[in-house]
Image (cartoon, rainbow, N blue to C red):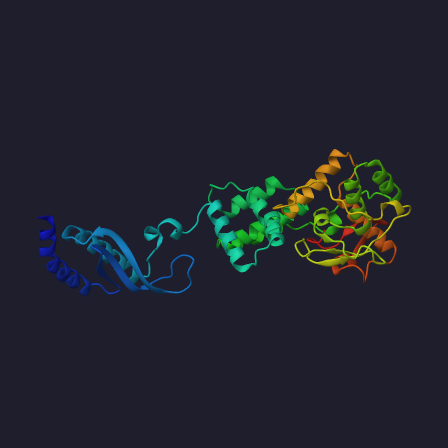
Amino acid sequence: MGGRSLNQSAPDLKERINQVNQGLEKVSIREKDNRLYVRGRHFPPKPGESTRGRYEIALGVSATPAGLKVAIAKAKDIDNALLWEKFDWEPFLKGNQKPPETVAEWVNRYEAQHWEQTVRSPTKENTYHKNYRLLFNRLPQDELLTIELLRSTILSETQPGSRSRKGFAIAFRRLADFAGLDPTILKELSKLGKGYTSKSVEPRSLPRDEEIVDLWESVKNPAWQLVISILAIYGLRPHEIFRIRTDRIDEDPPILEVEEETKTGWRIVYPSYGKGWDMMTLHVVKYPNIETEGKNNNQLGGKISQEFRELKIPFPPYNLRHAYAQRMYKQGLATPLLPDPWAILSPCNGQFIGLVGSGHL
């Protein structure tokens, strides 16, 4: 019975739809698969799109006389909104079509776009994790993304003039710009990050040559002696110990090649020996028993730092890298043997403080 009644009314329904469409200017009602839709060419771009186009909107009703009454009312509202250029997509978007509002939604969109524009590699993944993901994780994920929220997080999580505050300000400004927040107040985030320079870093108490060799002798494990030798003689970053080639270790001078999947990519590294370091030369390369499969650079570097603390070494691994740069500088070998970031060294009141240029330490 129900099927015959629907079939008998179908011609009347189509005729009624045609009559209604004659009174609409920007849209028309269409029937498809026993459902009713509004279709038109004059809709504004959807959120995230840049051009106008032909769109079809489901009206959420069946193709029945009762459903048509609802469809007519909705179609007239849409038609009027388009005529007055006041149409808003928000009520008609579902799921992923809805514009993001919360921090988590905007962060997910930002990261998705980042990897659409950036070739993904372990090194770039590691950089994004440190410079963006870890900082975005400090934000309350379920709250609305606002300038005030970004500003208050920077102030509560960092100290004025610090390197971390500068990093937060850069990452948060880019997220705010991506989210289309008011550009007139984005400058406030940039101002919060000002005040940090390389001279803001406290001078490191760098180990002397004799202290390094004493340390090397005190560590009985040959694998960790190797770690200390590589860091001290070649000035590598801790994670780079596991990203080197030793094919040229028997040349004069013995050369290491740092592989591509590191912070600054492939490069050749030359040795710089301290006084009394003959015993520290690399004869046998025996690595510590650390699982490297699937580990990123942060995790590998963290393992080295953790072991330094457990061995009660009185300084972090990076101090050996800075001591190497200081030694090369004193020996007049800052260039051309070293890559560009290492060529610019910064003496401060007679004491070397590190490498100039953020992102290369």
